Length: 453
Image 1: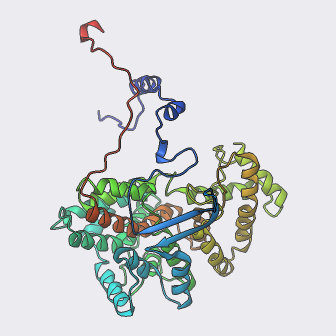
Image 2: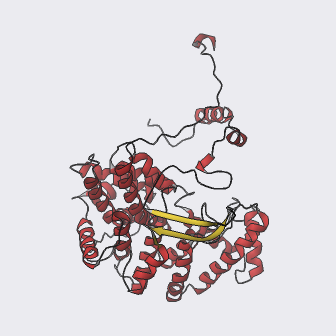
Image 3: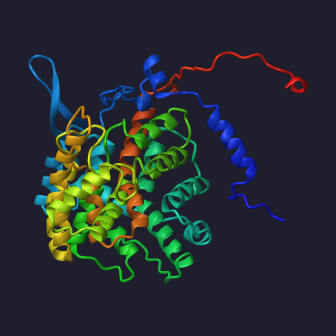
């Protein structure tokens, strides 16, 4: 009889108890040994582990007396303020994903002919090997789209005639292909899941090389392949804002660590996907959406007093999932504001009107206003707190009628650009494997022969 490998057997329970009982590391020991847990000090400042030219994040300013105070958040791509970048392509009525990708990969803004050439190149890369969709996606439908993404990225290694060459030229080729096909891998994975696991109709659309990345994502996802111009531009904006966020975020740091070993591109990106899948990283916007669904189910959301009381109960672990968190509020780096959230909030207003989500949008605004005051009155804070990009992205994806199974893969569709830029930068400048040190706090013990135990 075949074993059920998913079963937690009595043996596993017993041995897990032994493993838990033999872990004597306490939070105090980190302070004792001067170890920054999570590579962050007690004030939330990140431990510097590298240099980058790709992006910069500012969340505080230094006063004349040398002290640092919280400041409005700033995010720069290759030195260019994200607010200016977004304002530039939106004012001209253009899609911004491809322009921002060019900037991050090549460290300068493209002119018209360079952007057109880059768009054409991505369009030509937007295809998968023969029978890949059938053999690697449809024949092995998965329930988790991030795992499907990781698996299919690793599978592309077998179709690459030169997978292990880590020269800049070859890695750039691989990265451009991954940037182009990530929407296909994610959406086809979802269509397979939606058919084989949910019993719905299966439809697979081919991408249009003449369309933008955002347009193709919506075209591939929807049965009729149709979308409004505003819908495509909102998804494009979300992709630009999620594209890159410094070398210190977990998945990008993973890219640096794995790339420093000299491994292939597919392995490095699959590792980054594994990091992004975690609910502490890429899955936060799903939690925001579910939190608001619970709020609407249990209180009168048009009563500001009830909303405030619900937020208090969240912090006191008496509402929603009992985690004591107001999801979408606060960020590891930003304090007074997250520029990505500011941009997304303003631009989402028009979409809310088009899609009939005005009441939901107003509720999000109310929570964004009330939550910082409530959190600061009940928690010890070393910096300010504000809505982060995950707070609004979930609402945007809901308005775009995207399934929640694709929320984190959409994050990956954007962040693959940042990962690619950081992988190339690591290859260009590293030369050493990243190998941090851990302090062993276990005392030496003598070996006891088996018959004496």
